[in-house]
Image 1 (cartoon, helix red, strand yellow):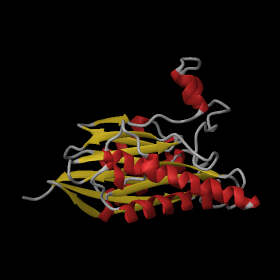
Image 2 (cartoon, one colour):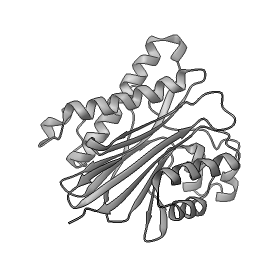
Image 3 (spheres, one colour):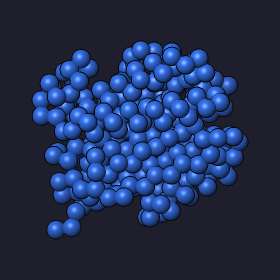
Image 4 (cartoon, helix red, strand yellow):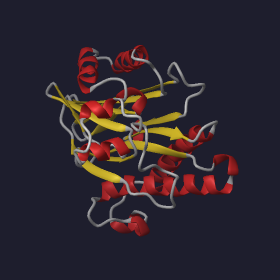
Length: 267
């Protein structure tokens, strides 16, 4: 799937897999090239609740951004959610995620079978006017970038283990197999409002971005991800190879991937 942004061309591919251990897939993804919007969500809550949370969150984000259109002033972007420290474009995706959180939270309150459900989310919204992208995330779904042959994790997990790592209470080696490595400290749906981490990314030709649920990042380290991403130029083939590798490493969770490549538009 392709879209264009001021001298740059964006190609993307998304894929989701149940994995080898789960009875059903609670992940959800959305690839919307005409909006420059790409989202991965990883639901939680048991039975069908996680699937409902991730799907509802993504539907609400896409709906809000499509209805809102391209804002020209802060008055065009959910004024009650506007953050003056963020750009208009960053505010758009931040407001969309926060509104999605309210919707998921309300659904859980109104239906007893959905109580306690939630979802992570990581998304990129491309800014065609300025060759930038806004990245928003809540939870432990991640965004990576491969640039000039090097991989970099652009998001920080909202998890108990990562918080302990940041405080240097535990080591990276201890974190890998810690019994609380799956404990999330921030997710959509658990509270009426949620803090969304947002950042702006300057796009460069040949950049390759990866949005993924922890079913991938929890099993493959950065060097595994980089090797596979650099050795598979076709995005669909690359996504399939990443999922195959995660399943070979155990496949204990749902695995969801969006790959986004930035290219120079033909003259």
